[in-house]
Every structure is written in structure tokens, then in C-alpha cells.
Amino acid sequence: MKKKVLVAGATGLVGGLMTKILEERDFPVDQLIPVASDRSAGKTIVFRNKSVPVLGFQEALGLRPDMALFSAGIEVSRVWAPLLAETGCRVIDNSSCWRMDPQIKLIVPEINGYLLSSKDRIIANPNCSTIQMVMALAPLHRHYGLRRIVVSTYQSVTGSGHKGLEQLIAERNARMLDNNTLVPNSVYPRPIDMNVIPQIGAFMDNGYTEEELKMVQETQKILEDPGIRVSATTVRVPVHGGHSLSVNASFENPFTMEEVYSLLTAYPGLSVKGHDVQTDFVTPMEAEGRDPVYVSRIRRDLSLENTLDMWIVADNLRKGAALNAVQIAEKLLSL
Image (cartoon, rainbow, N blue to C red; front, side):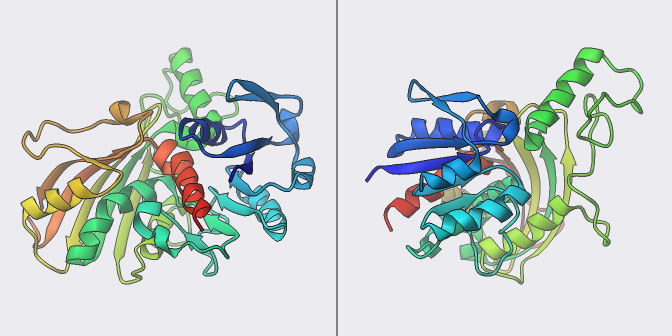
């Protein structure tokens, strides 16, 4: 059955990609309803070779969409997702608004899509870095019992939307010489070009950032194991698109490297490199614009038993956001 599908934040990086992926995957859209802020009034987007006007939320609500993909920020989701859900619409939200709500499911379809039911009206899409990390760890957790993760992220500027990309380009064009100087309307607290910034999100009282705590809490919820310990350091890097993670994972039970490669290679959505040639690793430049989560540099930790090191790379806008949301929508179609 074809559906009326609302895309909230349709003029943003993730919202625009949601629309593109709906088209790429031939999702059964009867009517696309692109929604954005008042600043986007009068704009149009192209969907299946047709121009579609961008609407405001109130007008879109009156069209009674069947499904909604949200990438419009926490405050928008907090107000409009429940209003749409009350009409019977199924809302998949990419913000952090609902992720840790015990009544809302946090879904990566390959891992816990079986939790979805016909009664679900709001479904949370996880954080981009969390998605690619748990994709690589879920099959190993099921066999060996994941106990602790130490992760450092290298997150591209597209994780901050248009503003992050614009800041990188502006700094690069200006050929900045003073690292203490920011371009106007900066989204980051320090220059990003020729630099790395060990802060993503606000700092919390315990010294961790919001992004780091997301990786802790969301990992435990998705893998359905509050006993998994996670220590995260999240870093913004001057990369256009694609997030990278250096992960050290400790397990309760022993493993062989052949078993590890076999489990990862068989898992849907993963692309595993380096089994035969260790130099066959993947960079964010190679992952950008592609769907898989790439796992490479897989090796046994020489300092600790039952522990692996790995390098995980994915396009943060695709599997880290828009693609995962559309995959959730596809699961809901069968319920």
C-alpha cells in the first residue's frame, strides 16, 4: 500500500537525503509532504522528477500523513511528533528527543528491528556514531558477551549539518593563519580547518560531553544490556563526510580471529576488509555516499585477554541517519 510520507527538516542535509533514499529504495510513497521551518517558506524540493512545495507543520498535519521521518531538531520533535502520532501517523525521529524514553524503542533494524510492533507510533533513530559502532559489535556481543568498550570517534563536519560544512569551507577559503580566530557565525568553539576539536555537544558535570554519553546510554539500550561499560571520547575532525571510530572491545568469552571475521562478514549491512591483506582498510572519503558500515584493522588486543581492536567507518548521513530511518520505515510497512 502506498503511503503519505512526511519528511520534517526536508531542506537540511539529513532531511534532503531521507527524501533521496526514499526514491532510491522505491519506497511506496503516494504523496511526499516535505516540511521545514518558516525560513524555507516558498521553497520546493524535487522528488521523482517533480517539484514538491515545502509546507509548514500545521498545514502538513491537516494532510494526515501515514508516516513521518523527522530530522528537524529536539524542540520540533517534542512538539510535533506527538501531535502526528495522535492522528495515527508513525513517526521516526532522528533527534535525541525520545531515544532514552523507556516507552520509546531505539532501533537499528539489523540488530533489534524485531522489537517493532504495529502499536508503535514514535520510534527513535539512534545517534550516528552509535549506529555504526553497534552494527559492528552486535554479532560479536551475541556470541561472546560484550563487557567493555573504549571508543574514540573522528566525526566529520556534516554531523553538524549545513552550518558545520559552511564553517569548514569558510575557514579553508580564508586560509586562516590564527588558530584563535573564528569565522562569523561559527558552529564550533574553535577553528575546525587544520584542527581537531575534542568536544561534540555540551560538557556535562562529569566532564563528558552530550555526544559521549549518548554513545554510552544508547549502546546499552540497543544491545539490551545495561551491564556493558562504555568509555567514549568524541572528536570533530576537518573531514567533509563520514565518521570513523577506533574501538577497543572486551568480551566475556574467548574467540578466534577466524570466527570474528566469519561473524562480521555474514552480518547484514557490514562490509569487512583486511582479512587477507591488512592494508585493505577503509577511510571516510571512501565510505562517503555508500550504505555499508565498513569494518577494518581488526586485530587481537595484545595487552588484554578476549579483547579486539577495530576501525569502523560509515557515511554518517546515510546509515548514521537517513538510511537507518528509511529502513525502520520499511520494517513498519510489514506490520
